[in-house]
Amino acid sequence: MSKIRTRFAPSPTGRMHVGNLRTALYAYLIAKHEDGDFLIRIEDTDQERYVEGAVDIIYRTMAGTGLIHDEGPDKDKGYGPYVQSERQAQGIYLKYAKELVEKGEAYYCFCDQERLDSLKSEVVEGKEITKYDKHCLSLSKEEVEEKLKAGVPYVIRQNNPTEGKTSFLDEIYGEISVDNSELDDMVLIKSDGYPTYNFANVVDDHLMEITHVVRGNEYLSSSPKYNRLYQAFGWEVPVYVHCPTITNEEHKKLSKRSGHASYEDLIEQGFLPEAIVNFVALLGWSPNGEEEFFTLKELEQAFDYHRIGKAPAVFDMTKLKWMNGEYIKKLDPDKFYEMALPYLKEVITKDYDLKKVAQLVQSRIETLPDCKELVDFFEELPEYDVAMYTHKKMKTNTENAYEILKEEYELLKNFDAFDVQSLHDLLMDYIAKKEIKNGTGLWPIRTAVSGKQSTPGGAFEIMEIIGKEESLKRIETGLSMLEKALNA
Image (cartoon, rainbow, N blue to C red; front, side, top):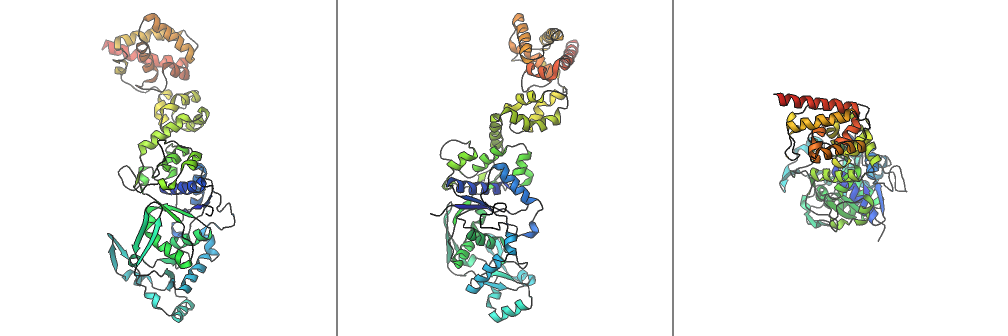
């Protein structure tokens, strides 16, 4: 068997959709699993949809996810150019289209838009389609030459049969047959001289010796037309791997408004590249076993494309958040601090040790921005209800909370070692001498210094970060609130 060669062929039309990322990932894994080559080819034949800077987004996304290509526009291994507009400028596609015309497998079409608009549509499998009626196929060679010399605008169309069936084998969906009567004579070369996406794909995949073509199942219906092109040229048909649809939790198409349509959307929401890659790999593919967490290297070893399913894959945001949280927990603390710092600085402007703040939140968040809501109380004591001091489980109420907090305040006022261990020893000694439960002694002071029901870290960690002056100030506020409640 020849060396496996796969390609990812994105169009530079904006951010990379999650479905495109999965296609890139699966194509990469199929190649790497067999020690093959993975190519990037830029398909920019649709000039109207071209977005400035989109090629940079493609490279940035591939680098960020670790999907390093063996060949591409920046790594020519003898199959270039790897940008379709550059290939078009060399006349590659027109040359092959004319070859099909000579074989009778394609023909020049000079119909104007008015005539095309007048063609009747028909309903096929519930969809209304308009098929070209082969009007220009009947033109003689002389008539075609005359129109070409006169500069009449034209396209080149594929000449598909109208009878019989066309069958092809997909590795996931098995053998699929289509009645030839359903095949339209699709355009191969457009009036602007550019090839259509479908035609350029076939020509480039053959010339670049692509062995396995990975794409979404929305291209299943186009595959018979691709196969007829391969057969018309006498080329070997590649292995087709069509992947299932990805839907949202409501089983609808992913949308930009939902925030999980593109890779960069997810990065901006604080998801880690490694978690995204791991999660996307599982959108349609089932590993052989119960393990769900894979590094990219482990995916290269484990990936078997025969285990890709047919059923639509659901993009479960809850699961992605959980998985991302697990990845965050495993991060090196210094690396996490570096990643969390921009978010921490958004809510904490005071000169606190943000590295210590980061240590408190690392195991408690699912996405990086989550840390903001957890730590905003460090910047300023939030308004809170005095009822928070009453806690059934901690056996605290307004009266004993006031008494305990007052005594702890007096201890802290004359205490200068505001590090975690020293604060722990001081207050735990107080709790032991007072013969109360730990929770009873610590709930009032944690409430006073945080103003929150739940915090990352306890009273000792919080006081160490905000320091003695701020701690005493906040405890004074708590005592004042409790005193008012007792006197009410």
